[in-house]
Length: 406
Image 1 (tube, rainbow, N blue to C red):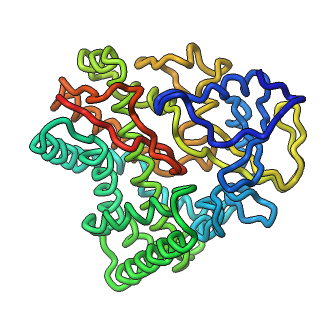
Image 2: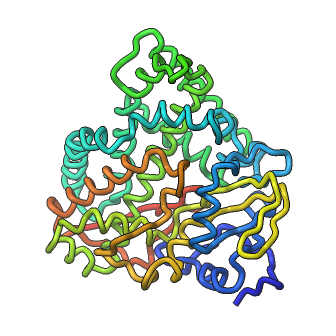
Image 3: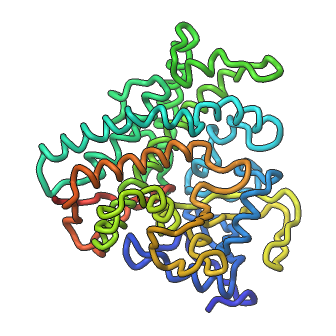
């Protein structure tokens, strides 16, 4: 057990014994040291929260910054920028207060449940096509390469009005910008510069000929005071949506299928009752043991968490995944329960700054699962669950491949 009076700096992120298992430290930290000292991949110190109530409170506090742009803020990655939370992209999008609410209102109109329902037929048709291609390829096949990655890329490119033919470029850029350890500073800088140049050219093209897509609408949209988003806001909004809109969902599709197939009784339960799909998606989101680094918050003022006084300048990491296993918030949290309801998990954050694209992610996850259950009822893992490998170094977690057969 970890004791509050004997906190040692743990290496973060922590890893479970397999790619689908949670780190053993989570339970020990929640019980004995809910406010823990950790060392990030950059080597900088941070404070880790693992209890549900503490994480929910911190994420719901609109006064706290999520962008790590203060001089004494921790760097996540060991490079000059410090990682995606320290980057120009993070700084360009308003972080909190009225500016953030303005930005969120303008962009959020494109991520309503009604718009997502309208997108579903197209998402389903593309998922069907990708499954056809995977079947034609034959098994065993990597579900990640055939379905989990290309589908979200197509969806977000369609939403932004960007040709999905450029998806290989997006894959490299996002890997370089979201990876904590794999790339040199020169490679990160080049990826960022190329990505910004690409998005700037796309925004200029939309200025000349706005289309019916999200960026086409944003270049002409005005807020309630008649103001438009700046060129910088538009470029980095497009970049952020491309990164968040495909990398996290692609990762989650692969993990969802792997988790459901790791115990074939789960898959059989869904085959017998497909109406459980929405609840199953929420439970997989809660149960995910490798969602990446979590969400940071920077403290401008002294803050007390779980009886611990945190001084100004502290960088706090909120582990939603650890919080989602908290026995104080969930019955039998270590079990994947397909019919769990209610399920107030924190996979998309909490409060007014929860994930803007969560309706889109849910729509994609539910659609993929519906299509796979209908088209490939005999789907199974082509490797033991314990042999699945993590995609190392990525800030959003994931599996390097999901081998399947049918």
